[in-house]
Length: 79
Image (cartoon, rainbow, N blue to C red; front, side):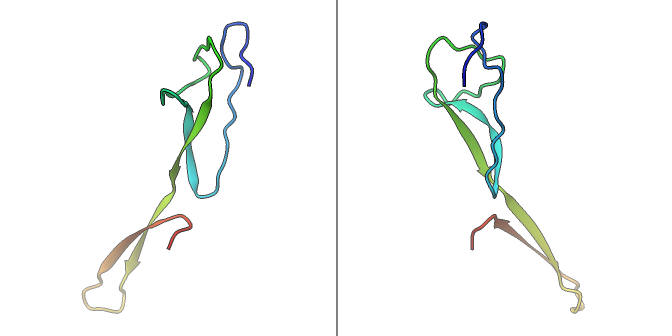
């Protein structure tokens, strides 16, 4: 990306990655989150930060007398 005359980025892409949620762009050396208002005085490497998507599934035992509910959390694309 190229900075404009105000030493700021004109835009930042929003990448996608199956099974992950994009958390934002961060400066590699400082782990500081950046935005379009961040100013740059030198070459800087930005890294995308991601979190795994998790799903919570509730199982209802409709055939028992107690009608119990079981909950299990799954991480995308894992066993």
